Length: 414
View 1 (tube, helix red, strand yellow):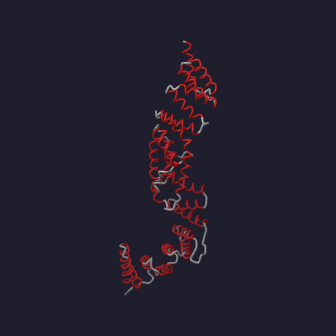
View 2 (tube, rainbow, N blue to C red):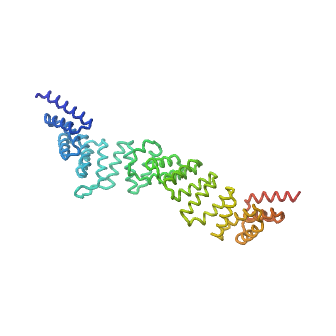
View 3 (tube, one colour):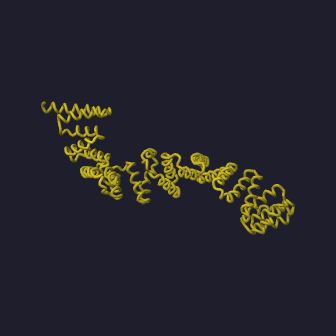
């Protein structure tokens, strides 16, 4: 067979082998590449493709070695050789192959990626440690220069910076990605990426007033883990602070569906419902909080009393106020709510007794206000006028006392 015919036959066999390889018929493809090598043993393309067919077989290593002898500085050959050693966890040879690739083609990002992976593997079969985080940082930084838009490399670098405690550098590296807000980067986040870092980053952006970036961070977390409790809680709080109460309530309710006994989520939903002027729902949340944490009952009864009066449920408000007095006798707040309830229901005698106790405990502007209202309901206008004046003396910003005092003075002038 002359040289031209041999070349044509070899090319035909290689092309047929590639077709089999594309059809995932690796055994048939390997036969074609082997026939091509029998005709032309130095055919690099046939050797490399034959090695790729039998990549899981022991003889694949020999074929990759042979290809590196035929083309010692060819980037693709060295990259394939390094990938083979990576699959077999042969760290020494993997490191050697990617070093050769990095020297032969400094602009080829595969060299930096391979070296970084080799340093991360850490040691060879003999237990010899090959590197440290410093080498990995250098390799990934090099790849980042060669491929500035490779977001996977960026995330790998961020992970290493987080692991080494360099949080400021990790923040700076993530800043352009978060600022761009590109949704396509969600698919590039590694499976083992630290979502807690994104939560901290969202909190930092929120504190600095960058609301869009904060929500981008939370979206990245929820894209990977839709039931992440921290992200859902943060999202609910941020939406409520921004005035979007309906979206905040939806986010916090979703959190409680996934984690029904999460007290922070329950408390956040209660605050949102209070802001939405839904006192009945807020009372329900407070009761659930008390079930989860019975020690919080003493602090919750006063709030439930307030919500009861706001929801126009005075009996419930009175009941909670009495419980609050029994639980914490020295707290004036529950006494004040109970006095207000008694005055509204024209129970002046018990209201007077409670007011006397309140004045003995602590004479405040609000107590004087309530006392003045009691005198007004009894028709004792002079005494009421003195009490309103006393309330103003104790707190000059008491608008209610000022208005009522003016009305009483006008009435007495007539």
